[in-house]
Structures are given as structure tokens and as C-alpha cells.
Amino acid sequence: MAISEEQVRHVAMLARLSLTEEEVVSFGRDLNSILVHIDTIQRLDLQGVEPTAHPLDAVNVTRPDVVSPGLSRADALRNAPDSDGRAFAIPRIMGIEGGDE
Amino acid sequence: MAKDRLRELFADWEAVIGLEIHTELTACATKMFCGCPVEFAGEPNTRVCPVCLGMPGALPTPNARAIEMTVLAGLSVSCEIARESRFHRKQYFYPDMPSNYQISQYDQPFCGLGFIDIQIDGPEAKQRIDRDTAANVSPIDGDGAAYSARIGITRIHLEEDTGKMVHVGGAEGRLQGATRSLIDFNRAGTPLIELVTEPDIRTPEEARRFAQQMRLTWLALGISDCNMEEGSMRVDANVSVRRRGEKGFGTKAEIKNLNSFKSLHDGVAYEIVRQIETLEAGGSVIQETRHWDASAKRTSALRSKEQAHDYRYFPDPDIVPFVLSDEWIEGLRATLPELPAARRQRYRTEFGLSAYDAGALVSDADLATLFEETLGLTGAAKAKAVANVVLNDVAAFLNAEGVALAQSRLTPGGIAELVELVSDGVISSKQAKEVFAEMAASGQMPAEIADTRGMRQVSDHSAIEEVVDRVLAANASQVESFRSGKTGLLGFFVGQVIKEMGGQANPKVVSEILGRKLGSGG
Image (cartoon, rainbow over the protein chains, first blue to last red):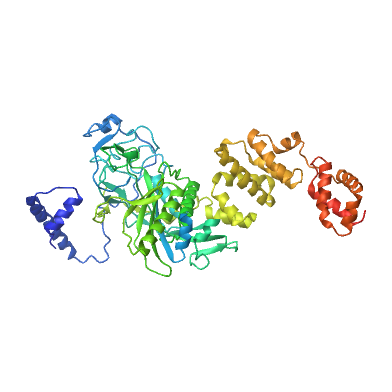
């Protein structure tokens, strides 16, 4: 299985990464070597083996519904590139559709 | 206008509607994956931590109570509960979601297929023109005035809510024309359940009744305050149309911003008419998201990117899977309260109420409680009379005053006494209206009011007989005419007697005595 440059660009767009032409080629190469490894695994007979999404055997790890201290607002906003002292401020949003709209 | 047009179009066309209902589990003390408090409003960014701000390295841990509530929600609508479940990451970019993915559920939600039965009554029942033949529909009361429809539920999954944005510089906080946006992450991470229905809904009224019943159900479970204005319950509708008799689905549009039950009904009705008119004019419906504008009363397309969504779901490696035991699930099932459909059924069979009255009482938890507590005092035999006072007098009073029952002076004891005064013939039903108004205004008990106002009807037979004799003696010629066949004169005699007694004679007793005396020639 080989990944095309087109697919590399698509995946980069979904992750909001802008790649140079050279990066498209080199990331394509890296991704391909991962896919080759997956191909090796796919040649094994995995009939009856449950897909593994987690390496641990643990299940049902939860926490009780009890309040714990969070961050002060000053700390929360400390790394923000822009804020009005109360909220995170961001530039105008261009043509995307999201939860609130 | 729209309603008439809809009825016209429904002769040839059928609407296919599915709903997606997001509900915040506001009864949780804390967020879905961190210990920040769940509250509404307040100063921005004061209930946040590294987890709900999506900071690198922060580890989410699921809230046990939120999972219980989700499974309880599923059990309340007859969902199959998954024995194995897990959380996935849903990847997309929007500034109100700090980690650039939402922790949600994908192919293993906590709750699978389920259903509820909704009741449609009143004039809107007529929107469903195939209500006598449709497979998921059955009549109630047999008079065609009300029907029950079974609506399938596809799934209920648990996820985290996003933050809130305010767009600055545009109109009314909307995105269009905004120069920048401010983000408050207080809401980010609030536990949120999403219920998705099968495309089983056929009319705007069914959509409204379904959503109302889900709200009542969540309220009965105590998992959310379901406040649509504050956004703790949010409804989106998928709407398509097809010619009657067709089996395939038309192209659907998703309607958003339906933030009241009226908006849900009107937005869906508008969209159905729009789609049918588009198709009848030779156009085609485009698959898109549309925004309901409640003041302009129309939907309009939202700007959106051409490409299809590509969320690249994968199991969240930060959260281990869930394995739910039968024992744990059955333990939760045992805590389920009485739910709306069962309660409506009980009011009809146990108390003999009409479908309409049962539905109206069940749709308002306060009125239903008042009804049941009053019945506890009067006994179930007076259920219809109590229901009448609660649904007419009480509901109208609360509506007119704009107050909740708890803020009023109305009590089960007061309502019970009023109903009994009328049924014992002490006051007339006309006088009862006056007594009710006084009781609601002052909090005085009905018997006391009737006494102070000298309202007590005289039902004492000997006192009435005395007056009847006097009246008959004074109107000998009318008595003659009555006996020779002019029986319509009975009303005249009743009126005379009541007038003679200052309006306080019980009309039923008066007619009885008059009938006896005139009939027997005495």
C-alpha cells in the first residue's frame, strides 16, 4: 500500500499543517514506511483476535463526581496570545462552520 | 397561514423527520473529564483547569456519575445498553474546542436502539393525515382526536460540551461581520448526552411532542434542568420530504437554532413547506445545514465548506474501555421513576381522564403533582372534577399571573375543599369560579370564603319546600298551564324560587322538589 502525494496534502489540510513541496515528499516517505509495517501485520492470520485499542487490561476507570480546584483565571489566560483579561481573544473566523453557528 | 399550507401540501407529500437532542447533564457537580464545577453563566474562564483547557499532558478521567446518568437515560427510553463501550476522539477544528478534538463516542455508545411512545392530541393531531393507517400509530380513546406514535431511538452517546464564543463587532453576537471573537471555556467539558432518533417523525407537532416528552423524561430522571433558552437542551432537526407512497428518502437538510419548542415546530413546518415548494417548482433540495431565524420566520443556508466532514474517529488512548455488568445495569433500572407515557396511561385507566387531560397534566410536573396530592384528599372518584380545576382554573391563573405554582397561594387542601363544596352542592360551579379567584388572591380557604360571602346554597329540603309552595300558590295560572302540558314553564318556577331565596337555593334540589309537587298535583 502506498500513499499518494494527494493523500499527504489532504491529511495535512485536515490537521491544519502547511507543508512545503519537499515536506510532502519526505512525509510521504515516512508515512509509507509505517504503512509497510502495517502491511506486514495484515499478512498474519488474526482471525478471532479482538482489535486492541488500549495496551492495558484496565477497564472502568472513573473518578467520583466531586469538585476539585482548577486554575485561576489569570493562570488560565497566561499563555494566551491575546485576551481581554476575562476571555481568550481570537481573530475573526473565516468561513467555517462549527458548534455555535 | 403556514399551517393551512402545510395541510394542503400534506395531501400529496409526506415529511420525514429525525431529531438530534443534545442535553447537558447539569445535575452533575463536575465536568465530564475533570473536577471543574458545572454551573451556568458566571465570570468567563473561572471554572477551568488544564484538562478542560486542552493543555498538553493533561489527562481526562471520566465522571462516574455522568456515565450512570447516561445509562439511566438509555433505560428510560428502552435502549439496549452496551455491555462494552468506549470513548473516541472526534477530530475537527473550531476555536471553542480547546484540544482540537472532542471526546465523544463513535461505534460503541453506551445506549443503542430504543423507542418512546408519544401522544398527539388537540387540533394538531390532524397534521398526521395517515394516522389511521400508519404502522407506528395507534388511536387513543377511539374518537380519532388523539393518537399515539412510536418513535424509534437510534442511540444515546456521552460526550463533552464545547466552550462558548462571543463574536465582537457583528450583529447580535453572530459570526457574520464580526471582527474578533472571545472564548469562555467555563462550559467546555460539561457532560453532554446526544440522543438521535430514527427518521420516524412525520409532522412538526410530532417533532415538538417528542422533544417535550424527552424533556419531561430527563426532568423526571433528574439528570438535567433542560433549559432550552440557556442551551442546556438543544434540538436539531433533519428534514426531508417525499411523495406519499414513496419508500425512499429525499435529500435532507439539517435545521439548527431551534431553541424553543415553538421554534422546533415552526422551523420544521417552514422547512417542509420550503422543500415541497422547491420540488414542485422543478428545483432540488440541497443537503446542507440551515439556520432557523425565529423573528424572520424562515430558515437560511449556513456558509459551510464544500468538503464532507472527515472526523477521523479513533479510540481515545487516554481513557480505558468500559465493561458494564448486567447487575450494575439492573441496579440502575430499579431506580427509574414513573415516566410520562406510563403516567398518561395510568391517568386514563385509573382515573378515567381523557387522553387530552391526561396529556396536559403529565406535560406539567407541577400540575401533575398538585393533581395527585389533591386526589389524595378527595379520593379518586373526584378525579375529573379535580383535573378540571387544575387544568382550567389553576393553569389559567398561573399563566395570567406569570408565576410558578410554588410561588402561588394554591394548595392541594384548598383545591380539594373547593371541589368538595361544589360536589356537595354547597356552592354552584359558577360561584366556585369566584371562590377560586379569592382563594388564589388571598390564600383563604374556600369554605371560609363561601361563608363570608354568604354563598352557601340552601340544599335543605324543608326550607326550599316552603318557598316552592309559596311560589306555586302565587302563580296559580302558570301551574294550570304547566299541568295542561306547557312543561317548559319548569324553568320559570325554578327561577322564581331561586330569586325568592336570594340566589342561594341549590337549583338541583329546587327542580327536584318542583318536579315532585307539580307532577303529583300537590
